[in-house]
Picture 1: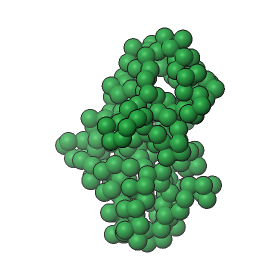
Picture 2: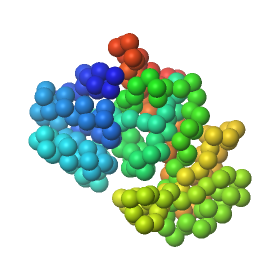
Picture 3: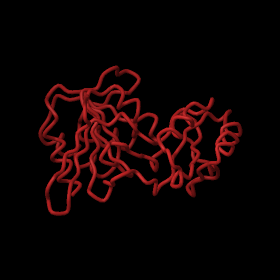
Picture 4: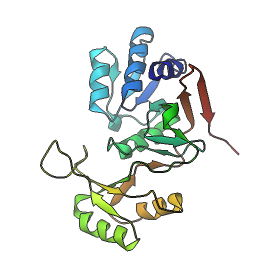
Length: 223
């Protein structure tokens, strides 16, 4: 399913484009298609693994901070619903991915049908990226809001998960929150919070691969 999804995404790529890429197996398949068929593109990615894979394939990679516009961007997700609300918690790259999405004319999610839900129900926690100096303050504010929150710990190192930009990740239990969008907005307004892993208005399209071999495309409605 993931390869089929990547193949569909590749059809949207044209020579000369600047392309944003996230991370994951579907993106790796998309890189293979780009390598086989497209020569004049530039890649921007917040993922070192993705950037290195592009480099190995001879695809030009440019740093995000040197880029002010992206033609089209692709990424995966943990969940996405039919309103194109999306959560990307596990990779701890959501702030950088939102930056790429903001620069892109089109920001497209690639997923198999197991990731598509009627409404994002937070089977994974909401990840909140915070400044290190705001750690205790932000946790207190989250607790004051009645939210259960804890700093993310990894078994791969002694201590907390630190993002590439030197910030901390706090995981918030969101599965019992009634108004997730408004609560998410309130969290982002806490001083010290950089951003969260809930994407509510950035995604323009989703390409969903199904087990029967078909593809479903969900496009953002415009007024």
